[in-house]
Image 1 (cartoon, rainbow, N blue to C red):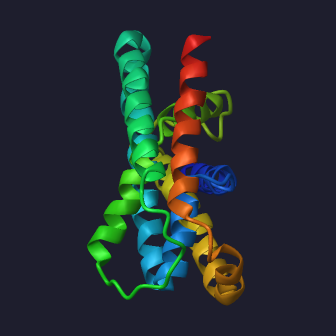
Image 2: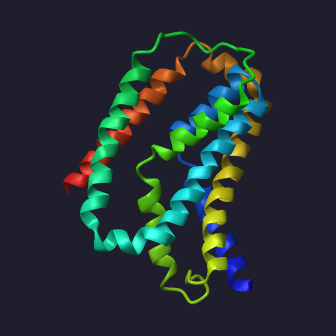
Image 3: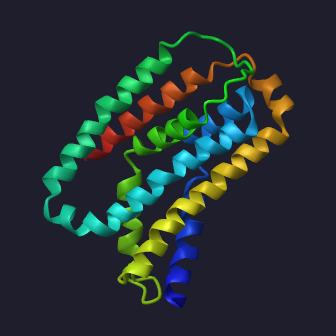
Length: 208
């Protein structure tokens, strides 16, 4: 049990640090808090941390299998590129409306929005597979038993949840200041650019 706790804490720290980079999910959390309220942003964050658990679990469960069947993983990586481009283009072509406060309370759609954005991130699975491989070189971090596997996936999810929740609270605290600065910016277009950038990065990585 002590080893599982260590794995959980280290994985949570890595997940928190890895989530510091600005991406579609964190930007959407900011946008949701500014347009609506803190609770909506936290629900987006909640939905966004679920794929971390899924991909970290997948890294443990099917990582070795995918290493033996690299062509399948290769197909999945290539398939993510047109999906990311399509989403990016749709966002770029969305109406150029400035950031406005709305009163929508569709909590289920907030969770789904965060979940979808994170699930479409092509970097999550290879990231957690890479971290898992690195862990195997350390006796106290070697993930073997079921409890350790759960600790690994839970740490990945809760670390991201902590960072995204922090982003939501920070945005809510400085809401008025951020609204004044971002009020005339169409964040959908910024998100669209990020999705297309992710597609380009993915393409470059696959061409190496």
